[in-house]
Image (cartoon, rainbow, N blue to C red; front, side, top):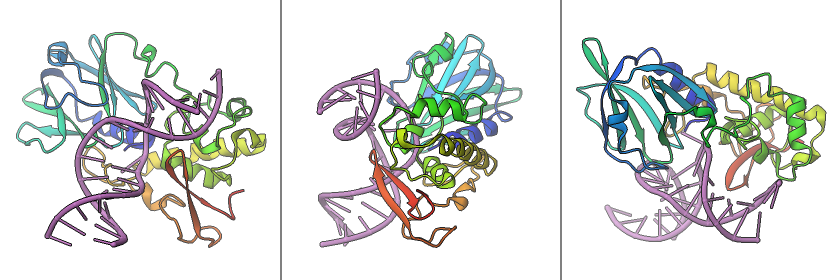
Length: 273
DNA sequence: TTTATAACCTGAACGC
DNA sequence: TGCGTTCAGGTTATAA
């Protein structure tokens, strides 16, 4: 999946392709991270899709009387299909839209079923999944003073801190490694030991990495393709992620790999201090 | 309160 | 060829 850039690329790809009123819903498998509401068909029927927005890694589909909160988990994918297109394995949910002469299907596929599709008729930002999220990485709210306040008493490792969605949303395992490389900070440093100057560089690096990944259409690893089936290109630009024992693009030192919180982490022992 | 770990699930890649 | 093990983009609940 999908870190923030992949979710944003998905949202941008979906927006021009889907609109109109829901005319049917088919759920083949209810068991995602949380069980999908069995009444979804009744709830959504005749409701008009108003907009698609994003908060962190959540896509918010606004309907006439509420919101679908969609999370892609590790392996979730959304495609827009015609009625003729037969569902394949792990196509768990179809939402049919009446679009003039034809019907289009919003199709949710998720191999590992870590994703979620949740209906709420209240303010989605007050939903418990979204209410305590940190700022968007590209917003002005996410700045050096903010992050320094967050890290200065934290004993956990800096990579874990920037991946904490209560600190900043959208920085997943790939972009955490990439941002720390760009900032010249080792992922295993303790957060509270990082100087204010370094935090300034780190904030800039996170913004650059996320922005650049969105422009390139996200990373394509095993599972991510954008809505139209195109792969992203950002993986061609990974400087450290999944490059263990390959030469650093900056100094030729071999890229190192360690595990932090059960996640693979990659860094250059020379360029990062 | 903060931090680390286990758990959710499927499939691909690898070693024997 | 086949079986067992490990690993994969995330996030929550629970343990320490």
